[in-house]
Image (cartoon, helix red, strand yellow):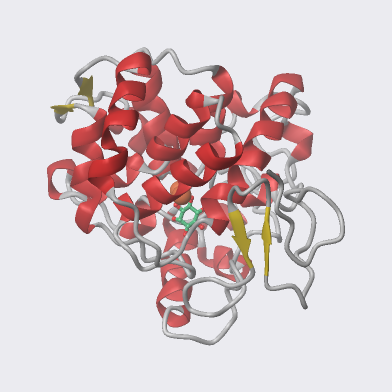
Length: 303
Ligand SMILES: O[C@H]1[C@H](O)[C@@H](O)[C@H](O)[C@@H](O)[C@H]1O
Ligand SMILES: [Fe+2]
Ligand SMILES: [Fe+2]
């Protein structure tokens, strides 16, 4: 049954602005898109004054200064070895029980809540796309890099929006001004529109700032997941807001990226707007998600 609240037409598109005077939208008895985050502010407002703003801004300052081309190259090589731990996907979800993401203006809950909220919100609107439910569950698992067994990487090397390194930093990136202190900012090899890349080279050939996205992509790929390529693309680029939100860096993408981007934009609605104080009953949904994990992953993965 379709229930429509205070909305004259059916449907809600990702890039549509939520009307200011409407409280919330309900689709097909499915996922409710809230107008404000758990702190009563609009989502992803990096300038809104509030308890999280100063911490988030200082997070981005150090992130933008330290994410250089050389740093990313070293991290990809080091963490691409996957020689740290062997564990299942569900064990990794549980490790995130205590992890709180300092870059996020919309959420201060442990990450496991966010994973389940995202997956369950997708399941409401896309009941038949089980691969997308599982993608929701695992997309942020790369945040285990914050854990002591992964060397307790600092937040700036794990979370936050991502962006290409090796070419100019686009102005649409959150708190762009802090890039001025990044050594690559003044390096002529890396500071032009194309930098070390070329027109339509494809994102697979572009190095992204290091963090949970690329790491989890490497984990999924190297452990031979059977998830479709759109799932791997979502995991790898879900923090690349400059592209999927602002449309920057389109000169680097190829046809395959363009196709995958459509799924990423659908996914983003659930990743972003499902952040709330509503808790999911973990034990209740666990059997469903463990069956999906069995379908798409080996029992133990190398991390
Ligand atoms: O603060 C958030 C958070 O770290 C998310 O996991 C990441 O995907 C977003 O891009 C970022 O803005
Ligand atoms: Fe993320
Ligand atoms: Fe997320």
